[in-house]
Amino acid sequence: MRGIIDILDLSVEELDGIISVACDIIERPEKYAQICRGKKLATLFFEPSTRTRLSFEAAMYELGGNVLSVSSADSSSAAKGESVADTARVVSCYADIIAMRHPKEGAALVAAQNATVPVINAGDGGHCHPTQTLADILTIYREKGRLGNMTVGLCGDLKFGRTVHSLINALSRYEGVKFVLISPEELKLPSYVKNDVLKKKNIPYTQTTDLLEAMPELDILYMTRVQRERFFNEEDYVRLKDSYILTPDKLRTAKQDMIVMHPLPRVNEISVAVDADPRACYFKQVLNGKYMRMALILMLLKEAGTI
Image (cartoon, rainbow, N blue to C red; front, side, top):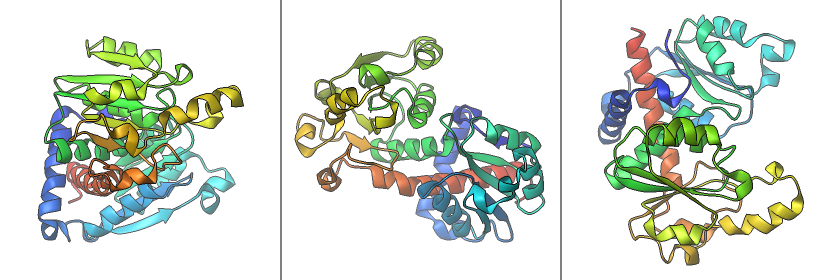
């Protein structure tokens, strides 16, 4: 049974098809209101989540289906020591499709290998979060009208940020994309991402520690949190953290049609004063995530012959 564990599990044609269905859902929600009637989504979340879990559940309800939910490891048989593989087999008896978040990298793959229904990775440790990337690319498409021919600034924690790595993988398959990598030296994009994706595909990129210097050329600014816990000492964190707090003043040199994105939750890396700027799109990302999850659920259930 097919699972979506990594954004690269979806071809460019499939990504474009999911975007097309999501846009149709936005335009004609009534067409989809009962398409999953009688079908069940199991949301297995073994670590905390607000947006992703509720987004999956809202998506299934708006398709006319139902939801079975595990919202923490403590409330499941994982607390008794049940393996991910056994959990996947058991839940396959109750649900038509599974969305799973787990703190261990690779757990979603194990679930997909053992389930008899489709499994969607809703985040496995620091590895992948493919449906966040789906939310990101629909936001870019709806705001910019394209997924190619643009300069994308990625700012903050580029070393450990799973959303950044997945977005690079997704956008690198479209023509004319250039990346500007903005981060402290300590949190630069890992060499394996640069070598395996950017250099291997001859995708242009630049690296800088200066957000203001990069700002004028960007079509998209994708902010992430600089994580205090990743630094070796407090002095380095204190020295660097304020470099990447986006304020209205720092947007003065940005293009009028640049968009500001963030996977959320934010802490202090985007001032709330930016929320009123028409270029702020991070809450639109949340809504777009629901539409893309609806489209992905439909694609997988159709492939499985369930609807």
